[in-house]
Length: 284
Ligand SMILES: [Zn+2]
Image 1 (cartoon, rainbow, N blue to C red):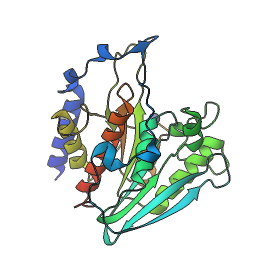
Image 2: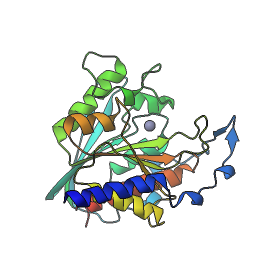
Image 3: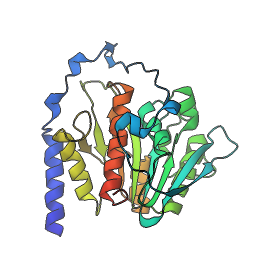
């Protein structure tokens, strides 16, 4: 078993070092302003569409119960968690959509996931995780308070820290088998020409095969608009790092590339979530 895990890790490291599918990108083709790749405009109305329409995913309808509860009620950060419970018992997954407010496909995918159904287990969907940031189109909760550097947070901290604490506490209470943390990759960094689709993990004990299959299938063109590369660990203070290290719950952070059209990024996010739910036996 240990040897098998070692082999998986070595393969993941090899993939990160030699991205087989990287040549499928053509960074030169993206419109730029001051060196930054410009996020394409979109007038897509999320309320008029569904995961099925955008991504062709979640095609089955299963009988589920659906309840919704608020985090940070009565504050500017107030947001909602949707808990979807299948008739049949199974695994539990917690989706955190849009810790950064300007990552539209991340919280947009979360909003669409609130309406899906599952065959087995329990699915929690928090979207938008950073509601105020999403409303204002900014990465931050307020000023330069970065929610993804504030975990696990404190009940008496600044606004990002209080929100982080509420989210961290809700994940701890749910005790999921996996957290999917939906983000979008930055499109420009000094000295780096292109940052693309990424899957970030800190510890993935027991789910190595999920991460490996996800990566290989995107490399092979079977999943996603372009290859996803594994990377890690999550940065200090991120939901990925805090939940992995303090709760020993595996987290996969999905980063879609903001140079692609919104519809494509939503599709990637939704198809990856579906892939993970299927892997865990929550879909038929
Ligand atoms: Zn982000």
